[in-house]
Length: 250
Image (cartoon, rainbow, N blue to C red):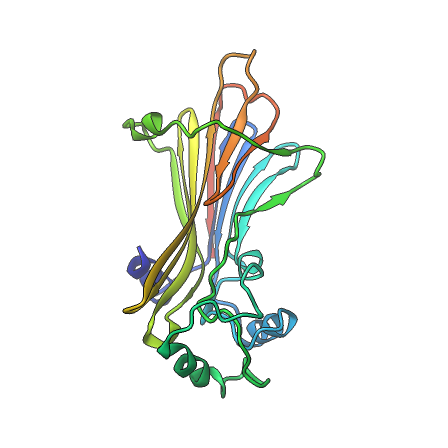
């Protein structure tokens, strides 16, 4: 997955935006170029961090939004804001070498200090719209894995890279989000992946699942599973979806 995403971004990449309508929901997947150096530098200063990932896709987003305006989106800026900017979480021999290699870059004008140079983030998405329209509560419900295993027609699929860094050739740190929409449900996976060569592999996954409920006596839910927390967003009843798709590129 990493190789294909990197290749896509470096060989003849064109910005694109896809919208897919699923009942009252609109799924938007936008892919754009890497942030400009001056914008990365400004963001690093705002976050009080010596440097940011080499490839920051500040305008990339995957959004799921209801016609009433509320929903959830996944973007690079909010993801990087969840990185610890005060503590070096992985203390290995290559960490100092990596930080020193960044000392002379345009993004590192201050004295080097401890921070999470692996860019580990526990980002789980950003709620959008009126906070009164979506309620987040703990739940014991489970994602219907058997339904996900079924061979259903995939009406829409996309994958969006938010940021990536090769840790000065000592591994890779990246976060991406992908979604697939089936006739009666959609499934989203947000994955932070870290590999520090010879030291560790770390994965933080967030899974979001929505299933159309055809029985009106049940409330429809979006189930979001975090690494250590299970939440459910209670929303209005979704009738059987109609489907339309538009695509633009530039």
